[in-house]
Image 1 (cartoon, one colour):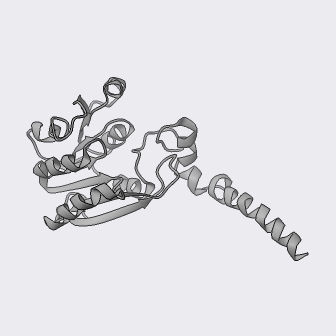
Image 2 (cartoon, rainbow, N blue to C red; image 1 turned 90 degrees about the vertical axis):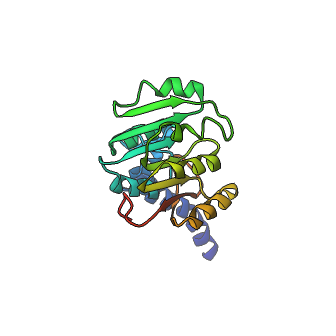
Image 3 (tube, helix red, strand yellow; image 1 turned 180 degrees about the horizontal axis):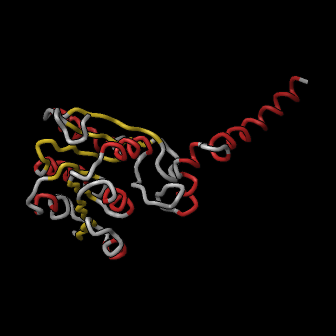
Length: 215
């Protein structure tokens, strides 16, 4: 009998897990849009509206903290551009993939601008933010050459500005994270699943006192 119960439990456990995560009303993977994103192959909510390809914890944080008084710059464009444009005053994005740039540039709303720069290293791509010759309240680094993009972003942050680095769990970013912290920035990490992702991903927010997100 014990063996029968063990076999039954081993069969019921994955079924119950699937029900709680996917089928049950307000199940996590369904309510966040993870299932919808997996089906469509793009980051989105259950209703199909766009999301950034970042973990759900930081998405929820940004949804609450971003507001229409902010000007945002992002490295890497796409669904995130449309998400941010719905929350802030303006979005300026730099894209390094020519084919993707052609797809995105005419789909973004009126308060968003997408520019193309070649995917070089420590060149025009990372310096697109300083070439804009203005300060930004929020900078999201989620494209190529991220270490150099962070260095250039620090030059273009407003006094209350916040810097966000996606995929900050990667070993190659640990040195620059320590460097930014050494410049007086506080470090706040968010971890969890991304839309259609399978692993635990980290996004790091760098901020100072009296920052624009009220942290």
